[in-house]
Image 1 (cartoon, rainbow, N blue to C red):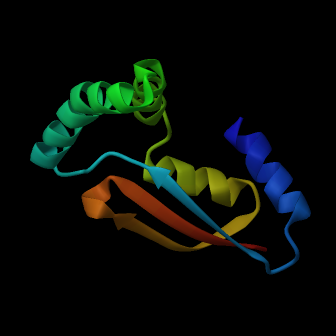
Image 2: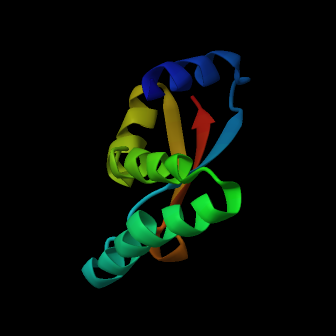
Length: 104
């Protein structure tokens, strides 16, 4: 699915056009990762579910983030689909990752 998305973006983006993608990721620090995962698996579905009345959506979010590509894997995938990743940066202690890429 990600490959199809990247192919379509590559098709419609103008030559030398830029694209920014912000993705959730997991902190690389083991202690921070453990704390974050505890929050992400237990607290977020509880709090988000209480507010939205849909805790399943927050469990799905957790499952999808945990099953997604690592930042290095995603960067390689972007490059394999014709993009030059000109900036890749961990944000919020690794909880999110920003990619800025250019169509070659």
